Image 1: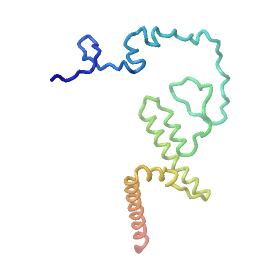
Image 2 (image 1 turned 45 degrees about the horizontal axis):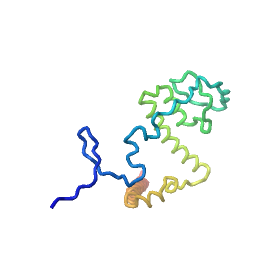
Image 3 (image 1 turned 90 degrees about the vertical axis):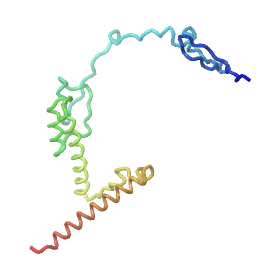
Image 4 (image 1 turned 180 degrees about the vertical axis):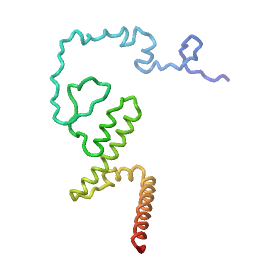
Length: 176
C-alpha cells in the first residue's frame, strides 16, 4: 500500500518541492516577477537639491546649551528645558570637553544623570516634599510584572537600611 503524496510544486535547482496552496488566492504571486506589485520598481523620488530650501532662522540662545566638540556651530533648533546647573551641570560641562567617541564623555554624562537624581531628591526635601520613591521608580508595575524579584529587592534594601540604622544607633550609644 502506498502513502498518498501531497500535491507539490517543483522549485528546481535541487530544492525540495513544497506543497501547493493553490486554493489560497494569491498564493505564489511572488514566484513570477511579472505578478509582483513592486516589479518594476518605482522611480526614485526627486532629490532635495531640486527643491528650493532655505536654512531656518536660528533659535535664540536664552540659556546655556552644551555643544558637542564635533559640531562647528549650533543647530538651528535645540532644547532649553533643562540647562546644566549644580554639581551635575559641572560634570556635564566636563563631559562635553571630550569627543563623543571618547568613553569619558558618555561615562561622565551617565554619572551626571545619577547626580542629578540625588540633587532632585535633595531639592524636594529642601522644599518640604517627601518624594514617593516607590511610585516614582515604577514600584507598582514592578510588583505586577515581577513580584518575586521586587520583593527580594525590597527585602535586601530593608536589611541594608536596618543595618545602617543599627550601626548609627550603636555609635551614638558609645561613650565619648
